[in-house]
Structures are given as C-alpha cells and as structure tokens.
Image (cartoon, rainbow, N blue to C red; front, side):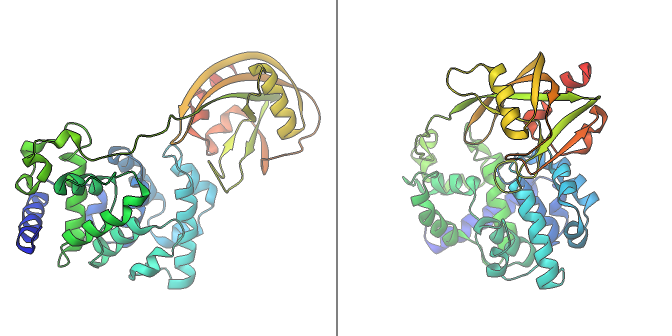
Length: 358
C-alpha cells in the first residue's frame, strides 16, 4: 500500500477498535505484569477460556514478587487445565529473573524482554508496544490471517519460511505513534471479524483496503500448507491401591506436562493387551508388582501434535518398594487429597469415575 493508504487503513482500524473492542480485564491497565500474564495465557488458547484463569491468577499472584516467591506446584495447580504447562514454568522462572536482575520492575527494552524465559518475538512486541508504547509490530495467527487477506499474499501462514515476509508486512502497516492500540486492533479484527472460517466481511472497517475481498476470493485465503495426520497412541494407566491410599507420581519438570502429577502408565507395545501394558508399565516405572482388580474407564484426549486413547484400571498392590524410573517423585495419597495436586487434563477426565468407587 502507498503511505496515504496505510494511514487511511490505520485510522479506520483504530476508530473501529475504540468502539467495538471487547472489554477484557487486562485491557483495563498498562501494567506490564498483567499484560504479560494475559499474553502468555492467550497463546494457543481461546480468550473466553483465558478470562477466568487470568482473574484467579491475578488474585493469587497480584504482582511480580508474589509470583516469584510462589512454589512452582502452586503455580501449576492454578494453571491446571490451560495446557502447554511449559508456559507456566517459564513464567515462574522469568518472574524470579525479573526480581533478581531488575529489582522486580518489568524491563522496558524489547531486547531485554525477549531474553526472558518463554518469551518470543510476539510476546515481547505485545508487552513493549501495549505497556510501553514502543514501536514493535505483533505477529500472531490472527495478524497473519488479516495481512494475508489484506494483501492477497500467496505465502502460507503456517510455513516457517513465510515468517520473514509476514514480519515485514506487519512492520510496514504498524502505526508507530500508537503501536499498542494498533497492535490490539489488528489482533481484535482477526479474532472477531476476519475469522478463519466465515469472516464477517460486511462488518469489516477496512473492507475497502482488502484485496481478496475486491477479487471475491476471501474463502481462498489465507494459504496454508497441508498438515500431516496427527498420530494416535494407545495408553494404559493404573490406579494402585494400598492401605486405603493410591499412588501418584510426578513428571520431570522439563518436557511435556513437566512438573505435573499422574498415575503410572504408558504406551502399549505391539501385540500387548492394555491389561498387560498396565502391569508392565507400573513395574518399569515404580518397581511395584500389582494385580488388576477392575477396569475403570476409557479416556480420549488430544494434544497439539498427537492424540491418546487411555484405558484406566484399578490395581491392587502386591509387593515391592517404590523405585522410580522416569518419574522424579511419588506420593501415597487418599482420594480426598487428589485435588491438592496439579494433574494433566487427561487424568481429570476419569477423576469423577475414580471418586465413585474409592
């Protein structure tokens, strides 16, 4: 676009945003701490889901100091159900770092923000522009979709090779005089108007600037690379009973679901039944010999890159002492204590069934 068209685009977009923006709790402040928390939570998560988590989190950890001094297990428990738990672990590390390096004051410099654990270009640009009015353009899925349709770009938005192209586009449209509101307005446009499917073009404030609309090709954009089929794995899990207690184990902090508690189990081997896998996995992970008492339930759960089908069994302890291989900690707890520990969502899916029989 020519400069005059860019200015016209910016003005139309910002005017629309001031009238139609959603009332979100983190938009009530310029506090970089709250903006940071909201942006981390909103990564790969629907805003309607984020709102109650954000409110609970801020109530429990109202500032950098309380978050930095918190036990990681408390942070993970409050995060429970949001998924992508590395976000919470990194946020906890970053809070400690900000206390140590910046005396608890959030760094204003984009490059310094970018060095914080778990912070990438998007979050750094969002915080620096919204909280500190620094001229850095954000680039998330919503923004890429808007820019793709606006410019009729043939670059697939889910191709890493296209990132430079879209970053340059985002920079060229940025309102450097009001970067915070502009970035939020562009993301808002993608979230409620320029949606992935069935965009509400007749309500779009920048429809006169949209090339794909003028060409009547909205449904053909943005371009995307075809995704590979998501694999699915069969899992067997055992709830081990011993003296009115059940065994839970803690995952390593690094990696998927790091720091969360779960019941021992794992993938089925070829030609292995779920019952056989359950007994074997418990023996390999904990050193315990168990006998299956009954079948509890079947659970399906999807992660970003794979799916699982879980068969859950109630097992009785037979012999042995707990010797961990994989997990880093264990507890024998009563069923009443289960809500005190952070668990993956897949485990939560059979808690109600478990509580009815224990």
